[in-house]
Image (tube, rainbow, N blue to C red; front, side):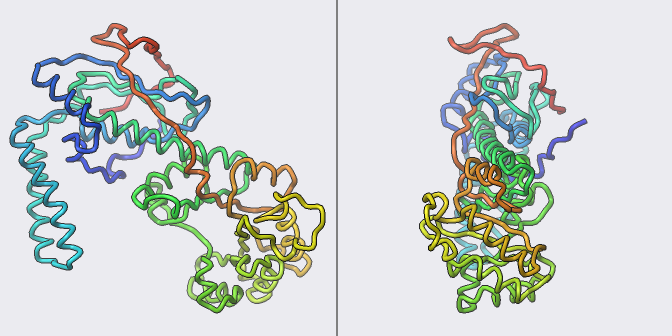
Length: 407
């Protein structure tokens, strides 16, 4: 039986989810209208997307949201007052922390935790009264195919739609794009290096989604946390600059102080990858695990500047000929053990071209492209009290691949 991630993996702001604080306001108002009118329609909510073939991700996180925030409050007047105070305390606690006022920080944190407990006491959990069926993270999903069904009293989960749709959209985008890169790489390792291209708060989920899509490594510890690993990486240009622009020395220092980490020389600092690779390999010998080529797409490496008849795509940045020259130079001097990592502007098309040409790349590091595109999900009410009822253009689409989620 396939396993899902435990809800405790996700750092969910549960109180804010239950109160509708992070959902479009009209969903919260819908919930309250139904509750106040004593209206409890049994709605079947059908979730899908419109791209022809994607790798779905975010189902476990969406289910965790439903498990933690399906239900209602027993006393809304008390809830509103407590929740407003809860949010106010969050802001005040942050100010105290930044001022290093730890006495106030500890005192108010205790108050906030007590309010959270009171909100928990007011919350009536009703997840066991709805039925959720879903695909798993990593499954293929086709256009219009039902990815998830939620059925039950709509007043219990109306306020959660923004949340689970947003999770599915984000995670599926990262997983699908990573899968496309991995497929283009033809079995070679792909590293997910997108930490600098988006907000730090998304790292955990993005790293997990990239892992689901087939990435063999991620840039930060936070990106690797959900699947129990650590971040990996090479060295930045700034470390080389710190040692006067001496790449071999910087790489040697890296190995000295990080001996358990594979030593990878970043060899484009002088825009002379062939010679810098050789100098670094001569310095570290068998201690050098790999070199990384990260040439800017506006520069022509020194080894290519006298080459005639090259198209722009074969001159600027990291090119097939540049990689071949580095590989040949390393092999000629007995450094065939040194792997070649490439980065900087890679996407599936560029990788596929490299692979078609047989370019001797060992590892592709990809960043911003994996964050690109849109993979929007939609939730439609398609049945009411067991009978088909949907807006024009939508219909109930049962999917035998869905599996029921345990309560």
